[in-house]
Amino acid sequence: MALSSIKDKIGKKPLSKPFGIVKKINPTNLIATGLNPSIGDIVKICSGNHEILGMVTALDENSFVVTPFSFLEGFKIGDKIYIDENGMQIPVGEGLLGRVVDPFMNPIDDKGDIFFETKYPIMTKPISPMKRGVINEVFETKVKAIDGLLTCGKGQKLGIFAGSGVGKSTLMSMIVKGASADIKVIALIGERGREIPEFIEHQLGGDLTNTVIIVATSDDSALMRKYGAFSAMAVAEYFKDKNKDVLFLMDSITRFAMAQREIGLAMGEPPTSKGYPPSAIMLLPQLMERAGKEKDKGSITAFFTVLVEGDDTSADPIADQARSILDGHFILSRELTDSGIYPPINILNSASRVMNNVVTKEHLQKAQKFKKLYSLLKENEVLIRIGAYQKGVDPELDEAINKKEAMENFLKQSPNELIPFNETLNLLNNIV
Image (cartoon, rainbow, N blue to C red; front, top):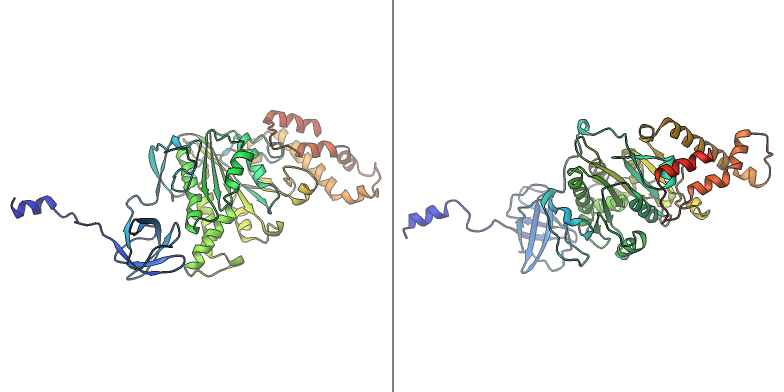
């Protein structure tokens, strides 16, 4: 064959795939040369038969920094780095329902391979403000304290704020089991590995019908924990685009922010309040604002748990920032836990910013009266206990005292008890 003919067949295609070379390895990232990547590019780091994924997180004139999705043990100077053509996309499809997967959608439940339909980008812009639908429908959770006094709407973003061991996981499981949603996407970010099977078996009863669980445990790398949350949101967006009403539940925002704190500090960002770099605060709206209701599509109603140090929501920068972004917050009280009231939602400190738009005027008035009576009871609790208050002095307080047991019973609910919305309204009506 003529040399010119061979040359024409080859054309201008490169004979080998371009690659970079590792020049320096740090405990949390590596520095390489030889490629011209962009910030956010996904790369493959290869050492013999060992291969992991990483992300380009910083650029210099002659080199670039790669933060790996796993750990760097076994890699050495001179290893090769290739650009991953798929970029920051994950495979998605109906086959994810009923499965437990990692942030790259690899199954970790030993149930075989998953059939995927398409790919979705992990990082996308939030819904445009003018394309958002108005939140005007009730989102039923079948939790009396929420449905009756802190009613949620389809497409709302809410936070569950609590210290350790107060009952976040139990409330999460109640919402998952009772929620009026077509699809349920649960992101367990930074949790202990032991908690994953316990949550599935004990809290959900092993029932993963129409449910996807995305897991990035505490022993995963910081980058895996960070993008695990974004991957889970991408899965929720896939089902939302298919006109489904999706419940998105993430535990927890605090560990997601801690992952970004590790990454940011390793990259040389200055620490601010509680050691969090600016990027950790900036990342919260990028994730949270992707939930919501979109015109001509479905909705994502999101619940994010926030771990509060010392039960003080104002002292934690992540809790404070999250509360300003979200459309409502449930504060779980250790005092109520100690009193035996579960779920321990402090209805006086909690709020749902869309409740006025989704409930009737009559329902709103009853909820406000319930809170007023309960507030009077709490304000005068010490006087009542020591017998310093005489009945007849304050008619409203007398009414609150008479209804104390009924109000406390309304706030109480066992984890396996699901109360329909209409029944909750009847109970509220009977009390006030």
